[in-house]
Amino acid sequence: MTEATRPRILLVDDEKSILDSLYRFCRQRKWEALRANGGAEALELLETETVDVIVSDMRMPNMDGAEFLTKARSKCPNSVRILLTGYADMEAVINAVNQAKIYNYLNKPWDDHMLESVITSALDFKTKEDERLRLTRELAELNDSLEQKVNDRTNELELAMQQAQESTRKITNNFRESLSLMTSIIEMQDGSKANYTNMIVNACIGIAKALELPPKEIEQIRIATLLHNIGKLSLPEAMRKKPMNDLNRNELEIFRTHPIQGETVLSGMTGLKTVSKLVRSHQEYLNGKGFPDKLKEDEIPIGAKIICVASDFQKLESNLLLKEISGPEESIEYIRSMSGKHYDARVVELFDKYYEKHLQNYRTYLSQLNHKDIKIGMVLAENLITANGLMLLTKDTAITQDHIEKFAIYETDIGGKLIFPILNSSIDALNVKEEEEEGDGTELEQKESDSQRPS
Image 1 (cartoon, rainbow, N blue to C red):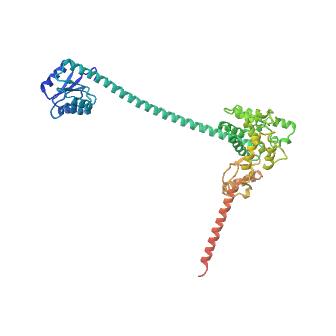
Image 2: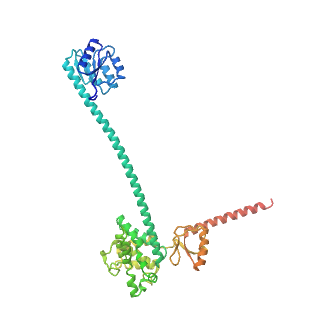
Image 3: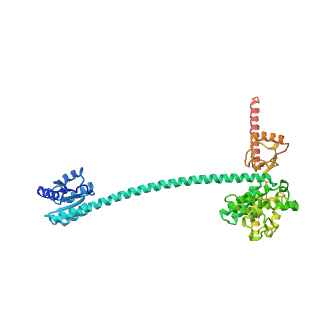
């Protein structure tokens, strides 16, 4: 019901005189009135009509007012129901209240003022109830709309997050590829054994985890380890490939600037400030006899202490730190002897454990083969690198006939020999396969020979 429409009242009574009286009563008050002389007729009318208030007599034949109003409630739940009763049957009224949920009731004969007041109150109640229902619907629609908007926004945010993650992944991959490229360049120009960087990185990460350093710090140590020798690119080649104790005073002075050169290169790169500090300090010793700043004890970052031990082991093993020391066993003995002097004792202890587990048989998992000894199916244990530092194939590459032919031409053209670091396990697998094939061939020959014998 709105202000623009007149209230509609349904009047139900089996007595025509009372029904007409109620009809005139409504018309005098400018209310639109509909009449029905019984419950069945009223229910049929409600199939097509909508009313604001229903006023029904209690005592009617076939269907009393309580039963009718209960059924009317099912058909028109928003209509306000009023009961007229001509006798003091409170039990019937109570039933009507409970079953039909009537708004009010009046006794016959009624007082016009009282009837007008009850119907007016019912219409006011109906107006407020309609408004409440309207607001409830709008709130539900608003909630649905908000929920949809939230879902849409959530989907947008998830998509944006996925795109950001994909972008981050690409940036991370590009960064890692750049690191790999820089590491390869450093290895090519350095005098160390090929593929040494992964050994140092794995050792440093293992020690950092054992010290329970935060993940962010471990990642910084990993990157610094990959790039710790980047400053050596500024040094003359002859100087890079000499043992440190074989350098003269001027050469040694120049050599000791390479951590500074490394820091200079890296400090200008976004996000590598801490990494650059580790690179600068990775050659500092506890007793202050390192370089370039002669730091001591706790002045040296823990990451630099870790890199120092692993890096010196690699240089010793490659005969680049002390000319009288080379090989893993002599190298680890020197590291142990300098615990608490050059190197942090806890780091040495952890590196020693790492050595016992991973480096004691360093490189025994591979065979160094000449070109004439390699076969199809063998797998590289390390990157294939030429004598002048050029990487030809990456680790884990399976040798093909095309590789064998191309490297034969390469050796002829350069007049040198390539050394292939081959996984022993792949050699063993090929040997087993060849033995099986030889066994199958012998068995086949025996069967053919047997079939040719006279019976």
